[in-house]
Length: 487
Image (tube, rainbow, N blue to C red; front, side):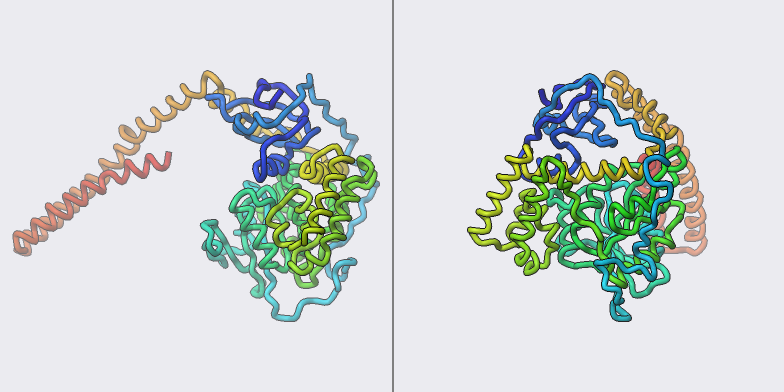
């Protein structure tokens, strides 16, 4: 059966993902991959779209899209019982010390960039992860807003406070580096073509499974990077915790816990960001395929593709690990840039066909599965998930009424009636009367002054009857409009 056929509360395992091109790739990037467990949370009041929980987060899909995803219903999804936090790791996690003074790892040469070099940064993250809040905390008022060249997508640039030779660009919120939306294309081209000196990847600590998929793609770009774990105060406040040292070791880049809204950890983040950019310390790890997983089929495929395109990737100026994974996914834009000849394209296709035969998954799903498998390992070894927050509980309780099948439409009508009554009969009407009284009083004062000054009757009439009466009548609607927009 398809995902569309499930009822609210039912669970299932994804068996196959339909669709074509960018849409199917988007499904995979969001974690809808064969073997993934999901639960239907609810349907919208009118029946479309539907909300599911997968990989620990909520995803909303249109029914037309859900119909392309085949599932196998199960009675209940059994969650892995996690051991106590202290037993998940060694008694003391070793601090890798990445991105710190005096610490240069294998991929950093230890030689700083020439003095006076502008350190450019790309601020990248999912939507609603606090990226704008962090950007404002980093730059203060040292920022300007515009659009990316030729694209009506917002672009914000700013200087990190206290560091004049820096320039940080706030890229649009995206979920992956696949070319599905204009925002994703802009973000990918900015990193690949503009080549910032470093990347600041902001991750929602309360939703790491969803956010870290983008992190893994950014690591493949072989650009110095620091991960900012935002909303750590929310995570710890609800009983959660993260082994920062262990996560830093597994990812191979500095990991800094922060709270952008409370401006906690910002100074430490800046120190690490300046250091990795200045010394060009690149990620230690980019290869996330497990040689023992399914006989190492993906591992062999990935490295075969890397060897095949090594010279082409260098000529195109694209990180070879990123290019290889994108070629396996079937990314046409990267394929064109590789400029492979006919024999090389044929060889690439043979490698991918062999992957699909050995792995039992299509090429795109195999890459997505590899990433989510590694993310799961990171979560299991470093994260203790928090209990459900009281804010989320309250939201769920309200949603049962406000988005309920039989109560949603009556609730909507009732809320809109209240808004209109308050706008046109209570708040808006009172403000309108107040403004009209003010305009009336001002009109009387000006009228008296014009009469006392024996101003020409035509000019007198123009000012009083034209400007004050005409403009005043239009202005009297402003309180109504402002009140309505406020609601």
